[in-house]
Image 1 (spheres, rainbow, N blue to C red):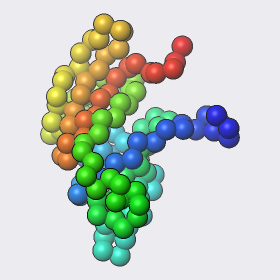
Image 2: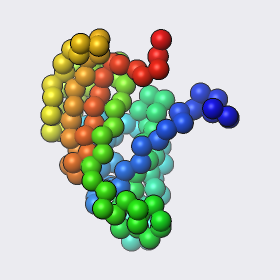
Image 3: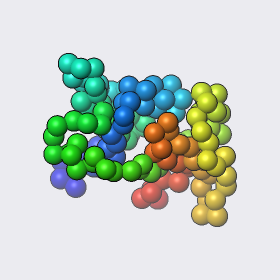
Length: 135
């Protein structure tokens, strides 16, 4: 990929009815770090970036005026997979914060250990040890 210098080239982008609440769940309960949040005059989240490891997710508030907001207006929940080192500790943190767990930490036949959670607006987050593309 041209010009990536180790920076990820895929960034999941999600829109939320309550983006501020989503940022709270993702940072406090699921271990993401807030990198940037830009708010509109009405307090909506125009754009936010949260990191986890060397990956990032971008998010914002539903109901914006741009082409992306219009294209996403009827979009349903999304699924995002995140690589973590310690699935059990990560899961314990999510449980401690009341996150809905869809699947507890489970050893998979392909060698990964994963768990699955749902955020308050229905997006499914999977956390595991499998790293696509790693040797």
